Each structure stands twice: as C-alpha cells, then as structure tokens.
Image 1 (spheres, rainbow, N blue to C red):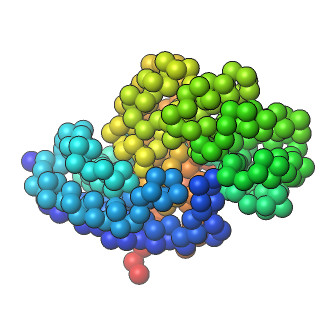
Image 2: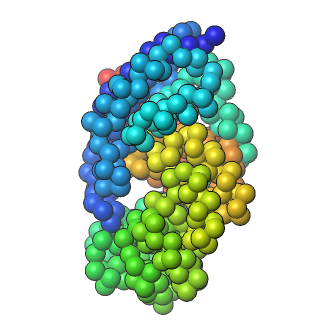
Image 3: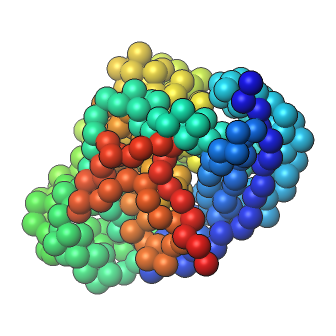
Length: 357
Ligand SMILES: [Mg+2]
C-alpha cells in the first residue's frame, strides 16, 4: 500500500516581467500556491494552483483554504488510486485551481515513486510541443514590439488578447502587428467579451491587413452558443471553446450546438482527471484540441505539456506564461528550444523542483 502521509500548501508569489492583461483584467504578480503531497515511502510530489481572479474569481486565499479543507480526506488514502482520488476531490472542492494542484501533486508523487515521467504516464505520444506566445492587452505600439520580439525568438503563432476595449483599439493593435510581422499567423482570444458581429468584424479587419486568423478563442460568452456558431459560420474562422468548456459534458453540448471547432483544455480550469475525459470526448466528436493554462509557472505548465504531448494530437499549444516569470524559484521541467517544449527527457514525474532559498 502506498498511502498519502501528508499534504501541505504554501503561497508562492512570482513576479511577472510585464502585466498579463486579458479582457477581464490584468495580473502583475502570479499569486499561486505550491502543494506538496508526501507518500508513506517518503516520495514527495509537487502541484501548483494558479488562481486567476480576472478569469474565474479564484484567489490565492481561496486555494489555500480549499487545500487545507481537502487535507483530512486525502491523508491516509491510497495514493495509487488517482482517478478515484480526483473524483472525490471534484465532489468536495469547488476551487478548481486547488483541485488541480492536489491532483498534480498526487500524480507527480506516484510517478516519481514509479520512476516514470508524467509524459510517459499519459502515453508518450509525441516528444515535443510548439507553443504560441501571448500578446496581452496593451497599446498598438506594445503589440507591435511584442510581435517583433516573438518572431525574432522563433515563435510562429502569436496569440493576441482582444476585447474589453473599443473595437477601433483592437483594429489598431492588429494593424500594428501586421506591419511589424507581415502575414502573421494569429490566434485571437476575447475571453468571451465580444458579440458575434464585433468578433466577425475583427476577423474581417485582420484579413484586410493580410493576417491569417488561425483560430478565434472564445469570441463570445461561455453559454452563448448561437454567437459562437455564428462566428464560425459567418466569420469563416475556426472557433475554440475555453470558458465554454469546463467538463466533458460541456464538450458534448458544444459539439451538438456546432459552437466550436477546437476545445481548449486547461488542467487549472477542469482538473487533470476531467481534462483526460474532455480530450477523449472532443476526439470522439471530431473536435480539435488545444492545451492552455492560467498564469502558471513551469510546474503546472510542464504537467500540462506532459498531458498534451503524452496524449498527442493537440493542434494548438498555449503554454507560455513561464516566459513571463524570469525570477521563478522553480527549476527543471520541460526543456525549451525557442517555442518548442521538449518533455521526452523528463525522468520522473513532471521533473520540477523548488530551488533552495
Ligand atoms: Mg482563453
């Protein structure tokens, strides 16, 4: 028997090199939570909660309290039963980022015990992923210089946060990007903030300056299936569901509503266990897969990279927030070569550890 002997959590604040702005607000400091799960053989697994108040209202304090509340049920449990533990966590814990941190730490501990990488555990389908990089909400000048820097670093897809401002502002930002980076390939993400008309107008203005909109993530509200469908059909652009897709059942709804082409999976939003079900459900319905995250360090993002590369077949990869964290105390994890994230060299778990202070 391999029992969970202890669960502990502490705040981990990581400064960002620049504010991470989206339609609903911005973050200048990642106020995350580090979770340790210790098994009876002494193996320690690490997990991360990345509450993002502007996306889901969760805070660092919410995550810490939820982890503390979940602790008594976990301590003494059989650590080999990941799916069972994850399911009971999802019934007890409302705070999604806390759930994700606990699931990740349990899986990490289990995989470290078995001397197996998380990538191998998830199936080892592909050794690497190629990530986009985000151009957050900001001025046209800022968008232009961010796009230039990203292309110089080898990124081939830029993800541009839109919405939350006047339509002309986003048009100007896209025009500035098009001037800086001719024929740019973009993913747009409105975080649910636009109407179908506004989203379609933005796609058309991007096309008029020769931008290839590869994907439009959550152009309209999470439950506004009519608007999402309209953007796909009238805007002739692939639509990804993010806020609309939090569980496998949502994926079925999106498919039957013809409201999305791609589902953006995030362990921080849905948990690890549910993300696995969502991936299988999306595939069964002919929907494409994207992997993303909140403002996460290399810890949670390596876990996500292991899941996506382990399962394989993810068309869009948005695991870029560690690049905002130059002063992170976390070490190890995926190996970066420009936009390419290599998880094939990980030896056990997600391979991320905390640097001694
Ligand atoms: Mg999104």
